[in-house]
Length: 401
Ligand code: F3S
Picture 1 (cartoon, helix red, strand yellow):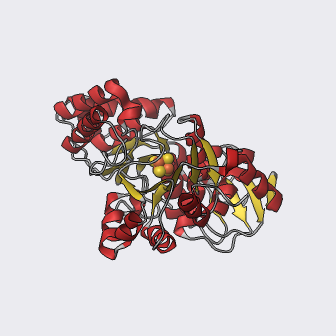
Picture 2 (cartoon, helix red, strand yellow):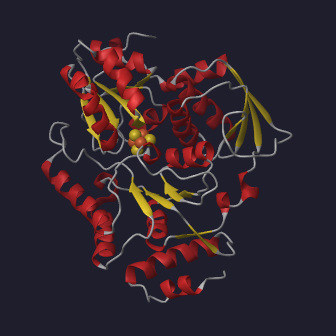
Picture 3 (cartoon, helix red, strand yellow):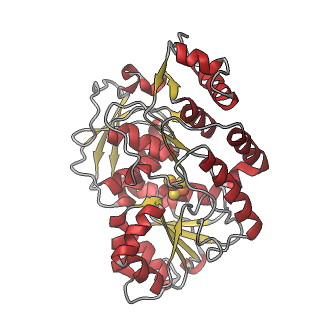
């Protein structure tokens, strides 16, 4: 692989130990994937932030980079942590976990990473332009950035994203190359889509059929940002794809593939909904969490309207970026939701927080959250529209079957 003089200097350790080790990772990846050169990235999103996933070994790794003077060279934002950094006690997080999580965030801060702790960086200021090369981890954000924004990123892991941040470079392979961004399978949608639930179901239905292929989706008339973020999370979780094209909606150019074609009808959507809903005794729900991926201000406004003047019976979390919550504070949405008994969980989410054993049944409007709630936390799940989830929080019961 051809390296510039600046890249060689980094590799030789002339820019410090942390940069050298990061450059070794970038070069090794480039060699594995047959890249001819490295390219600059304009932004990075680093996942692997929760102490629940990192453990002591992960914390030591991050501290060592910070202690060695590692500093990021481009705008770098962080995925959710294992707790709300301000409100962790109210959310039932234990003191020793909080202390470890703070040390993780401190290590990232020392590297000059912007401690955003959100999986929707594109809603709060890390918004790459069409065609820009970036290095993002977090599968839902990767899928959104590639597909909706038209930026270019591979599906990075936490360490490779961090290495890109410390060097400002990534190897040019995979989805950085236009020839690898072409659609591979046509998906015809013959069902009406309205709201994040429907788009979550669609992601499930398509993902299960196509795996990590790139779809060219037809038959969709409109899609909001909230629906596209729901879809990005769902298709990336259930299929593994990092890029989709929707005719008339997404900005990337692609050849329409010939050959394989998949049709999604009402039946496929109902099957998806059934698969995401478990049988639950008497429909009882003890935990409702919305905002996966992290809620937008528009979603929070809707939630505030729905809970205004009511009281919730189940534990009810709205997960979002702190910057978005600050706007909700200004608008009075936070007050309305908290007066109803709801809780904001900023900087974290129902998946990366250490919640195993605390609840039995999660109700959510996120198909992705269902996957991890079952697999990681062993919860049963109820999946529906935002208004069905809010209703479940108020009744403590899933009443729409
Ligand atoms: Fe974000 Fe957590 Fe969902 S990181 S995409 S809210 S699982």
